[in-house]
Image (cartoon, rainbow, N blue to C red; front, top):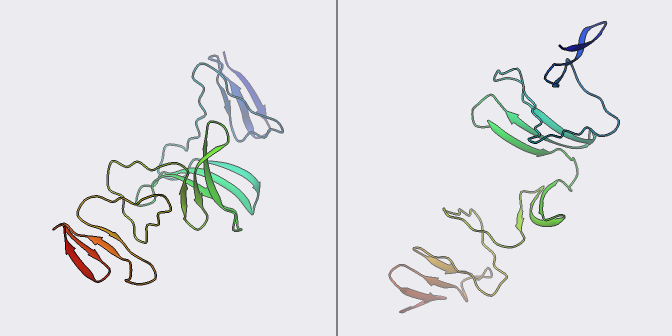
Length: 173
């Protein structure tokens, strides 16, 4: 049998015979809400239509909060969105592993920092510059070029035909 709690507006909460709990509106808690079990799950669902995006908000105040929401309507923006709504220059996403060990950061200006290495099995497309500050820069396939940002002096190019170009002169390899 179900246990039903009502208010002047109708049903407020129902504890079902299978021990699940249904709330008619919202939950306000001043402490913690914990979900335990062999396969705990928190499901936030809309009514099954393509409107009304299920959302989790992490709230400090109206000028500093984040949300994770699922855009249900289809189209170019459909999918899961992670959004930081801070209105100052400190907006960022930080990904940690093994405790508080930062591994990747997405800055508010769109810059991405990866702390160790990047492994890709497909193509990596770059619309700007690649800057290397380690011992070497290696790029394979059809063309490789290291360019001095101060001009053409010191440029190195290797083209598919095996030609090595240093600055403005070329030497066959």
